[in-house]
Amino acid sequence: MAIRLYNTKTRAKEDFVPLDPADIRMYVCGPTVYDRAHIGNARPVVVFDVLYRLLRHEYGEEHVTYARNFTDVDDKINAKAAETGRSIRDITDETIGWYHEDMDALGALRPDHEPRATDYIAQMVAMIEDLIARGHAYAAEGHVLFEVATDPEYGTLARRNLDDMRAGARVEVAPYKRDPMDFVLWKPSTGDQPGWDSPWGTGRPGWHIECSAMAGELFGERFDIHGGGIDLAFPHHENECAQSRCAGHDFATVWMHNEMIKVDGKKMAKSLGNFRMVNDFLNRGVPGEVLRFLILSTHYRSPMDLTEKALGEVEKTLRKWRGIVAGVEAGDLPEPIRAAVSDDLNTPLAIAALHRLAHDGDAVGLRTGAAVLGLLGDDLGGWDAMPDADDDLSSRIEALLSDRAAAKAAKDFARSDMVRDTLINAGIEIKDTPQGAEWSLTPAFDASKLPEPSDV
Image (tube, rainbow, N blue to C red; front, top):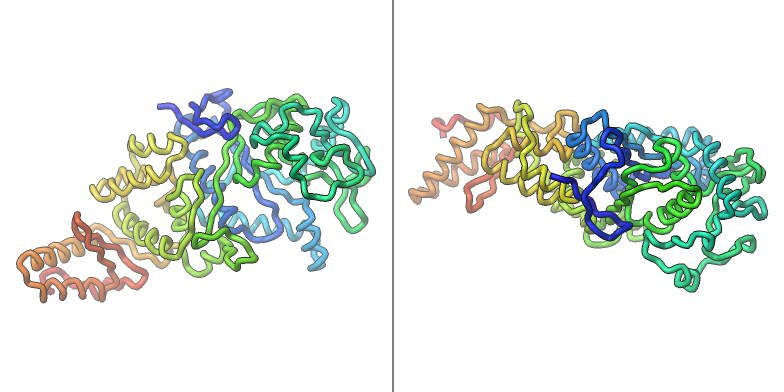
């Protein structure tokens, strides 16, 4: 079964055909490291982690290379350094450490490469010099700008017309620009800003040149997949495409973008007071696996709504599933899971298949199918307070529920209610469904309060 992926560039779902099956390369735009990661930053991490896991499963771990960068030179970082009196390196090192902690808690595998922009300044300067030599960039007043008019394919990734973009431009055009759409490759630095020597004076790179130079250095002129949030499609990825293409690089074959996250139905924004950091959830006891599951519950190309109700429902499901797979080793990947994830990362369909496996009591299938989504792993943090339901405990609970069901069938509602109350008092949540009663352990579970079925 072929892996099929939606390519933003072609606006179509296509069979994934690696450039080299023995050397599959994926590059995903990472964060600008000046503050803790918010939940929106987490979505591409989780989405492309699933793709990374799938590619490793299908082609072999040794044949897949994943890079995700850190932008560690940026005006927001400069402003924070000026405000706090701390060095830029100190701030970015700390922030990268936070990022790793938060993404590890979400069960994301570390990429094979995590390039920092400041380690690739020489490659950026060389690429800019090449673009000038090819007639696609020009120097002006200490800046170097990419000349958009020299690229006839500009706008093809985001499907935007250049003339329409010029007409709709609302920003004040810098006097050194030949065209309002020209974008900065290099800009001058003042004494209090980070700067590097270049043919155009002391300065620092523009944002867009970073990924083109780093991906080119790590992966060569062509690689398989470039990913990121849909907010990056224009102008960031469009500009990456243009400068790389004009430097003679074919660049990425497949472009993938995840949609944004809403909070309680509203766009996440600091001005609305609904900006949520990953660490905010972790600090109040929400397991990272719950956030991961919730992110995967919506297809990556659809907007996702984060609500407290959804978090609670996901946690109940995961607690039950962890009880089912306790002590079980993984086996072969169930075909419904593989088919779902291979179909443009249809994680909601895969989760539906996991629900069926859980309902059928297929612990091995549940463990194995969840693993390709990065769920139910032993190394996921945030579940320290969660009790595990071993076989003996599960049998006792199921026996009590059977007793309750028999009492209800006999219309002995007093006994039925007594058994239910006994389970609830022990910290077990019960949900009656058409298929029977479902149960899960809560953080308040106390095994000493759970009697043997014969004692009730």
